[in-house]
Figure 1 (cartoon, rainbow, N blue to C red):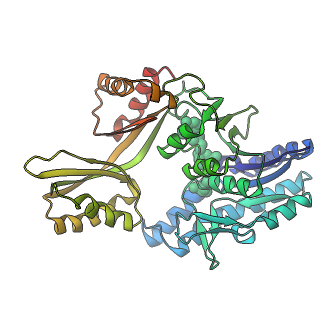
Figure 2: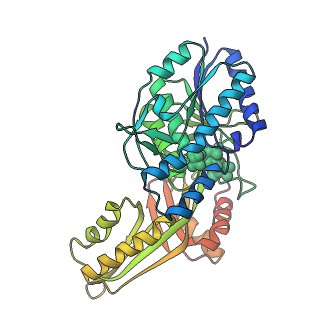
Figure 3: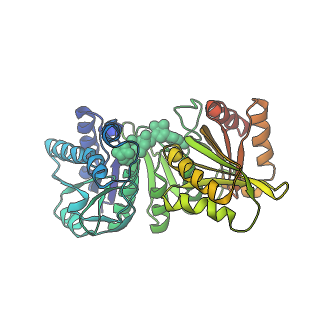
Length: 404
Ligand code: ADP
Ligand code: ASP
Ligand code: MG
């Protein structure tokens, strides 16, 4: 019996009419084998960037607005129509679905909405009728009928959510690389493809900047135990399976290196080292829906301390302005910021059982003369903040240090 497979095609995969016809042929191959396929697509490559830039010209860098989501989501509407037409052209019956037509419900947080539920009836009926549903990724609809988007890269999350709702046999993320590599293959030419990676490691890598998968897609796959695989749209091969069972399968201490170059840091200097201060500093930032990442507080000298945290670069100006107000309220000496930093992380479940990984990270970076500005660790990762200009060098030296 055929399987039910959800296939998500990213921007490059649907970047031109030729590529869209290529996708249609690829889907046809599965259908001819007897598989049922649901396709989820992103906007054509460059399209969402173009829409975001247009929105910015009128509205500025703020992205939390009803109309901006109407704008951003339009790229996927174009793709579902073109992919459905291409499927029909190659002899596969297909039907496009906007989020609203499924419906795929989200909360009302424009620009970073979360999926609440998917009514699977319409998709199931189409599948039962032998139709390939072509679903618009990245978008959702609120209970009130407002269009939302899931955050950049969010089509992966749409695909996993659809796979979970349909209890699919597999969710394939079809993209422009043939799997998950030990580091971004665009930066590290010698990076190696992993046959498998544990769910835990993939979640860390994605959250720490490896954009091959949207972090929430990995989270959702874990919660609903959706078998998830990253494969190439253009070449054959098994790609990389995100596995839920194995622990430290390859016996490696470190499985991969992630980097996020779009980070910024903010420091409040000379704040009183008393209970409640950390909360006074961070609460207004969280209330403004700004994600705060690494947080470091120094030990105090003379009852005063410094408090540093990182945010995504697009949130930097807003966070800095908020902190200006907070700093006056709590009588801090000074607020300063640096929007030119990046975060480089080594990830591996093997770290749990190996001491000395941190010292190897620090030594490898020291050898290259790279200053570490902040450090954060968990059981299976070590992240450092460095000057943005050292990003590539840091990733390369760590990739070599751990023989990846
Ligand atoms: P899509 O448009 O298909 O969603 P993305 O550009 O979002 O594709 O994600 C694929 C890209 O992720 C690759 O082209 C690659 O540059 C990048 N990437 C970053 N880290 C990794 C990694 N560890 N393994 C594979 N690709 C990675
Ligand atoms: N088109 C959206 C973006 O560029 C969603 C996605 O590609 O996953 O962010
Ligand atoms: Mg993507």
